[in-house]
Length: 461
Image (cartoon, rainbow, N blue to C red; front, top):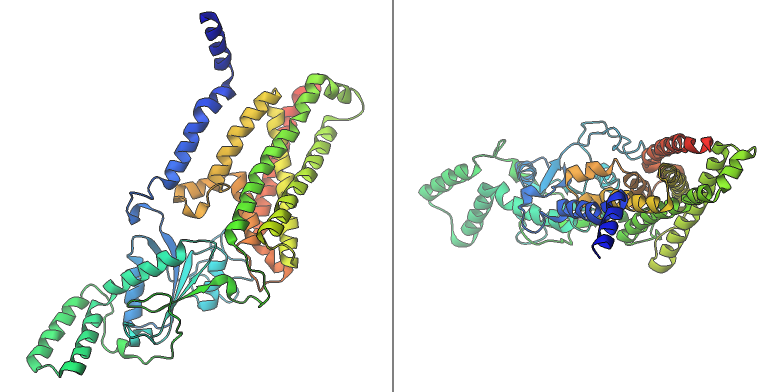
């Protein structure tokens, strides 16, 4: 018994892939998900990733300026009042037309920024908002909360923090409006009482730069009604997917599109590495040696396998998305969606096939390939967003995901099915996927070069 146990232990110790699967992979997964979810239950708002919100102040009054300032001071929000065009993550030319870097956005450009995934939500403060603040009696100008249903958290979180910010934004104005109501129903104040009220109002206004009289007395210009939240601020929640979309535009559950892409990319990588393992079986059986002894070059053999596996991968992803369309109403049969899907699925399949060849040529056996591919693909999938949306990850994890194949493949698919512009033409609809596609093509070239270099050992057979 002792001898058998010792032999088994020695075999396991020599198999580094098996050791990694047994001990390192569980620890890696525990670490990844602990970093993502560990702080959600017991951490304060300042310790979680803030929501990125674009504020559009069309009122430019004391109240609106204070409200934006108070929102920016909320621990769970990161408020921007301008729309800089960042390299690599900026809007496409069609999405950013008419907007220069550093220019304050309008409602339409803010909606495009939310739709493109640049911001979790946008708050549009209408002209006349300050004159009717607070909205106790209803009918006041409503702040428009433009949200993307792809993020199920943003609408309610931003709306709640907006109400919290309103309480701290203008205490002096709240006090003044309360006194006005008191005078209306209880009679005018005496001069001494009025003086005391003004002193207290000035005290409450301390800490808010730009607090000048008269700005809050501007006239209103009509309300939007149908407020989604009750409180000091009337709020209209607007689904960004309904803005500019035709009446017959397909409606979908965006999380279906997300997980169709996430699961599709992850299992595509598994199937490509599994298929590429056939070259190791050919090496063991001697079939590869016989091929090399003919006039067929190793480069031709690798190229043929790469193209065949890519075609297989494209068929696999197509079946996944067609099933999503039939079973879960995932939109697919429009010119924009079909064009984007064909481009992204083709490049993803070609790149995944090259990745599978790289792993197969690096490994020495089918069992080694199976263990190594499991470790690499599962970690890339967890970090790259195939399992958990990257928008809920901490900033460091979200950035790390951009160094994985899954991260860029997900960005490409979501550019078609998630951050699409319903009013764009076919060519314009491809703009959000150009960068991810270019990065995947660069990865594909690197994978193929690495596979060809690693396969040189077979040329000495």
